[in-house]
Length: 310
Image (cartoon, rainbow, N blue to C red; front, top):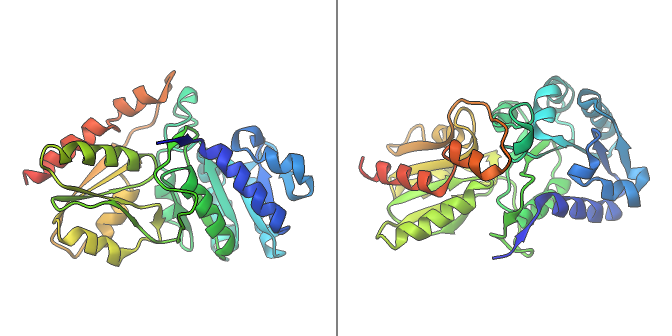
């Protein structure tokens, strides 16, 4: 399989869309070379606004632009958007259902070198708790591009988080994307694993390994954490009777919570796999961090085997 960097693909697709639609405005908080909105700044400077390190002001300006009919894309690291600018997102954008797209790059543990202050493991929980907000976490760079195209057509506030690290291609350039839809990645009959973001690839690798050991694992990619397709989640869970959720995020309020809410009236055994109420920390590389927090294939395998014993 080939790999692509989601930041680079994001910059390319947003520029492509901005060429076609002059209502698209990219706003950035002094990180355009990291979020890759520098591509728009260079080619379409009239559709780019550098806001400096002022995320709260940036989201307020984005709200104002949306009121004039523009489609603002507010860009920064996920941690700064969801924590510093929470009040503006809640009060100025979501309360009035304004058409603002909030793009959180370097999400999860992917900003490994900068430690807990720059790593966001609670952004999905924060954003999905706000009424009228849509929350997206793509599984690869191609799905990210398809999601951005869908977001431009969608009217209303959207938050998307993505990693800064390279991602293996699990989808193709021609695959579509529908907000709210879940995608079955492989079939299985013993357990259903719902995964999002970078954990989709790990879940698929685990399923492949366990298949050789006689354990049948269904893997479902959940790129839209909110709104969640409750009917699809129930149907995909019923026939296996066991569910594992996996995410590069706190188990409090993230994908696991969303799936558990969907299955609250069903007799289905469910377990969470994610970060257990902890901050991130600094590392020279990302993999040691993932291993430290148990975000790897061995940990997923252990969780699956434990569930199958119940």
